[in-house]
Length: 155
Image (cartoon, rainbow, N blue to C red):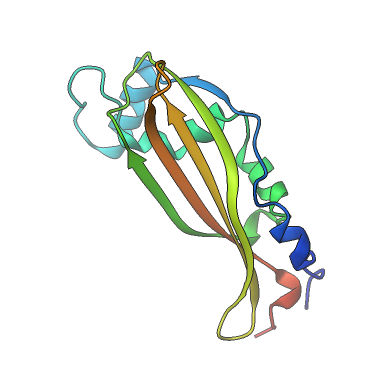
């Protein structure tokens, strides 16, 4: 049974440049400890933060949520999102107890079609972290597929 029609392609392209509020985030020792522990890794030297923090820290630091990211791309439901990639660029080691400034925006959004004709929108979010001096610390680029149920064929 087909779902609702996808949003117009022009609406999807129009979200390019959308900026999230931005803000700051500090990774505390307890948070770094728990994140490192859950990966099965040993703690990194000194106050260095495990890179797994880049899954959630930029989103929270940009004063947004995964739900808001779903809404910006007009997701049909929580189940309509597919992950293409999470790309992490680290320009310097992230450290505990350091206040990072986070900015975020949509950098790409376009409609695509799979070989079987099913439509999806490929949307890319970029989160930039700067250290207290304003120097680039890291960048996270998240690319999701917003599967459009109205275009899916029944099997």
